[in-house]
Figure 1: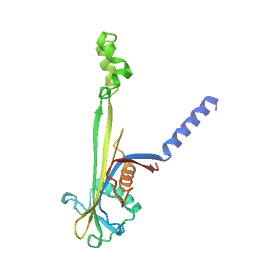
Figure 2 (figure 1 turned 180 degrees about the vertical axis):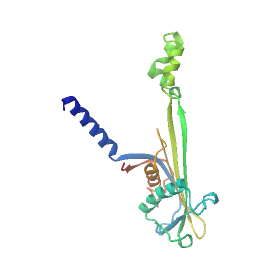
Figure 3 (figure 1 turned 90 degrees about the vertical axis):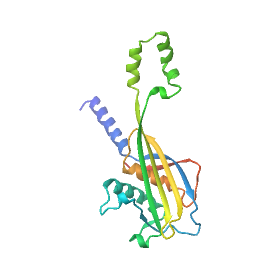
Figure 4 (figure 1 turned 120 degrees about the vertical axis):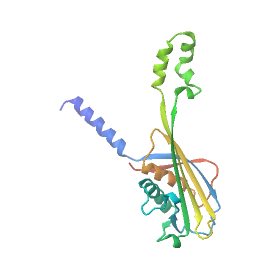
Length: 203
C-alpha cells in the first residue's frame, strides 16, 4: 500500500467518524401557560383528532408520538395506562414546509458577487448570469413542532410549547425528538419570548 492510498483511507476514516458522532440541533423556542407550581408532571395520553382515532395509528403519527414521548419523559411525565387514568392530555403538531430560495433574496447578493454592475454595464452576457444564478438556488425546509398539555378532567390548557428551526433537509425522527425536547426544556416555567435552545443528538 503506497502513501497516497494510506492518506485516502485515513481521510475516509476521519469522515466516517465525523458523520457518526453527536451533533447539535438548535431551535427557537417559546412556551406559554400557567402550570401550577405545586403540580407534578404526572401521567399523560396523546390526544388525537377524529381522523387520527383509528385502531392502528398511521406510521407518521406513531413516529411523531414516539419522538414526543422521549421529551415528555425527560420533563418528568410518564404514559398512563389508559385515557381515564391520565392526568393530562397531550396534543402534538408538526409542520415541515419547503421553500426555494434564490440568491437575490439576500439583499447583499449583488454586492457579494459583483453581478449587478456586470449585468448593468454589459461586462457579462445576461444568459451567462442566468445560468450561473440557476445553480445557486437553494431549497430550505422550515420545521415547526408544538405541544399542548391540557388537564384531562377540566380540559383546561396548562402548558403550550413550540420549537422551530430550518435546514437543508426535512429531518428525521431524531431531529424531531430534539425539537420536542427543546420545546419542553423550560418546563414547568414559561418563557414566551423566543430564545435559542440547543440539544445534542447522537447519530
